[in-house]
Length: 111
View 1 (cartoon, helix red, strand yellow):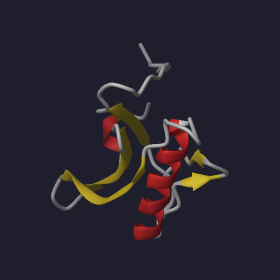
View 2: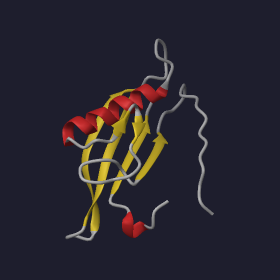
View 3: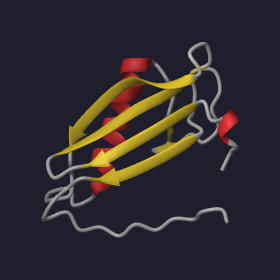
View 4: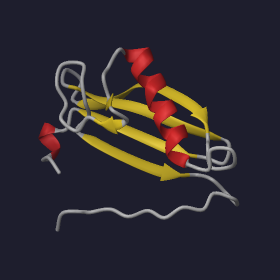
């Protein structure tokens, strides 16, 4: 993970029971803090016929891309290096779903 001084763009998603949300947060150097830029959302796709929560995540991120003209996805993968109107430095995801959403989360973290 990059040192916090180098983190300029953060993408966060939340998979809820019915709606999956994505937000883009960017560092405002003049104010010295982070700001919420935009929010996208899409139906959560955990149930039939899709049965793949990733589809809802991708659809919500695509809405963020459309609203900001910021390239975040390339071949349905998150662009990890940020630059001019492209990519994010950090991607985080949460789940606020109650009940039926069953998923496994795995990750790698630095010591």
